[in-house]
Image (cartoon, rainbow, N blue to C red; front, side, top):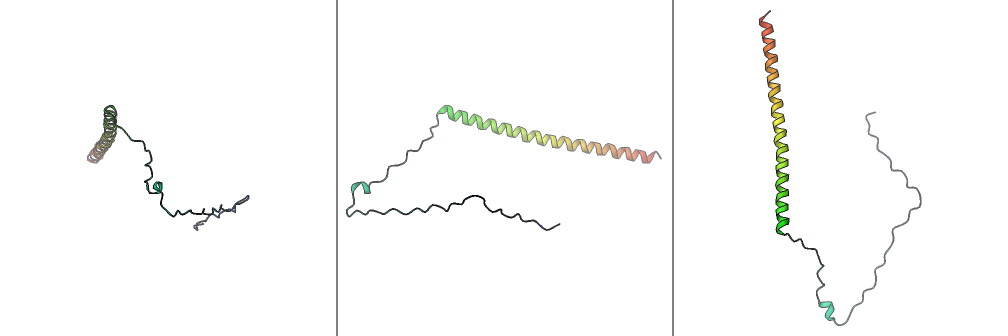
Length: 106
């Protein structure tokens, strides 16, 4: 009952194809270096990110909004915990007072 049950791997069904074997192609060696072989390969064209003043303002505004929203959520959670703790403390004092006054009236 307390021993783990290890699942078994089921046998594959259907046809299994072996992995394809790729033969390396023959290399051609030149006796004299050509000018194109010595030239550096062209750099890959990568898209550049250009920040316009409007985009910078939008990024700053978005970041500020995110910080304000996250801060408001965290402060509200902290406030909820503080209010709950205070109410539990008040309830404990009231119950303690009721129990103490019941003992005095006997």
